Amino acid sequence: MSRIVYVNGEYLPEEEARVSVFDRGFLMADAVYEVTSVVDGKLLDFAGHAARLERSLNELDMAAPLSADALLEIHRELVRRNGLDEGMIYLQITRGAPPDRDFVFPDPEVTPPTVVLFTQAKALVDSPAAETGIKVISIDDMRWGRRDIKTVQLLYPSMGKMMAKAAGADDAWMVEDGLVTEGTSNNAYIIKDGKIITRHLGNEILHGITRAAALRFARESQFEVEERPFTLEEAKEADEAFVTSASTFVTSVVSIDGVSLGDGAPGPVATRLREIYIEEIRKASI
Image (cartoon, rainbow, N blue to C red; front, top):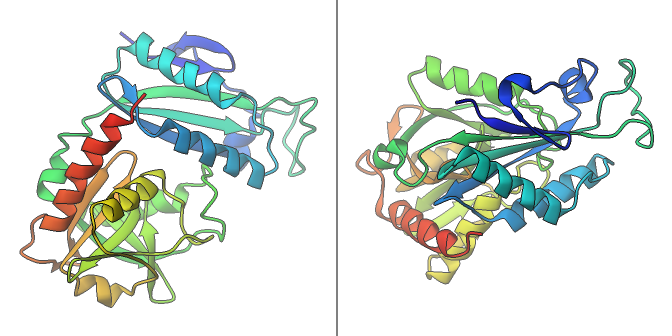
């Protein structure tokens, strides 16, 4: 049975879904996206994703085609139609499909946005990667300067994933001016002497929704948190490290560029924070 997806107001079998060849998401990467996790058939931190979506649209001068309440109902309907118990819902909004290709933005009164959503089934709570931890390599951060906007410009992160795969690792941490920015699809953290250290918010990194929740839960649980840049050398000398994202929750990093952290297994702080995150975020699911 094929998935049911949402395209511009219609629920369709994925085989019947169509987007114009002139869509600016396809031609220009002129689009934003969000990924919302689903556990036990319920949405995790939907309000946070809706708020970030609105911010991304505003930063690109794109009008929101649907209200947060309308998007919530579409998310819930996709969960229902696809019988999704655990996984993710991907949402993408583009500037639409004008009559022809042009660098100039089309008139929004004439060209409506394109809205696409689909589900992805995936084990999130009992993730194999969370059991073993992941290995990362470091690569130069060569992305554009507005990484705080969640656009679909994902070519370089995809290349980073492939660099990691070629090196026998799971992911890559990007480094700029000697400082770690983030992972290819996640926020990056180190732990030293029990303190959780992660880069502060700015244009250099994505303002992660899972990041915000994990740090809030960490502080509520009396973990010390410091938001500042850290060097690659600091990371390699850390006691533990981890990443956060909607698809990984809190997942330990056990080696960086072949250097093992701790005893080479998920450490106690990251492991406990993952447990707290899952417990607390489940309570707030809708």
